[in-house]
Length: 74
Image 1 (cartoon, rainbow, N blue to C red):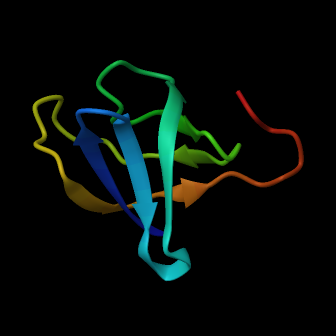
Image 2: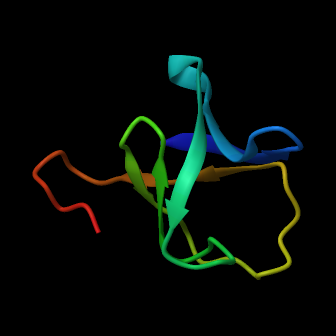
Image 3: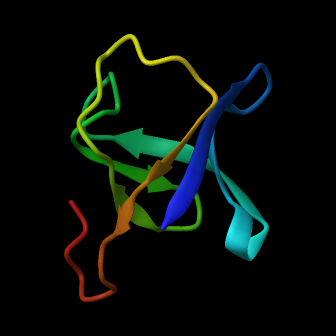
């Protein structure tokens, strides 16, 4: 799914999903640099992010894979 990751002064890191017109703060991440691991949004979604250089600038639109609802949360 296409998502935008951005940083805002009040909310910190957040994701925006254009197809759903949904914006959620990122509440947890596997790696401090985000890339190549999973992130967890405030709504409970866990998304796998692609490998990217640690200095990748935000905002950025990427393809992320949503993990299933079968309890495979980290």
